[in-house]
Image (tube, rainbow, N blue to C red):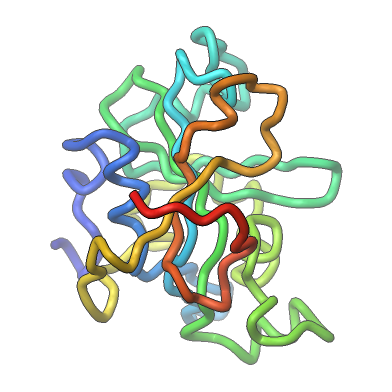
Length: 207
């Protein structure tokens, strides 16, 4: 693994569902402007498998200036702005021109926690990064990181402190995609069972 980062093959050599599960327990790191690190343990993810997935931004092969990032090589950051107020951080997977991505929904704060508390003033530690918009605010992720190489020095993922056992992973339907019809029921949200940093713990099912 180059410089301790997850290698390109982590993102490109398996299906997006496998990557979404494998990301649990890894360390998401953002380099702050002063050179320090802000990092969290990934505890919740959602997989999006375009172009057939109706919940994917790339459904039907859609290619716009925003979604073009999804067609890049796996190990690329896809960051978009929603509801006029929140950023969301995604990991592009698979090979070029296959628009698969994993939304990182929540992390457990590990490094730079004081900085996260300032960015998310008034929030309990368990709420600092317990949701896709919250984690971007806490870690300082915005559109400037859209398209960043996850093997670079701006944002990346490192191996976590321990291996996550399959029995520790729960799954259920993705959140906020009722418009996707039957695709909304697919159990493509994964999280560490028992983590207090998960955005929402309802509807739990074991894989």
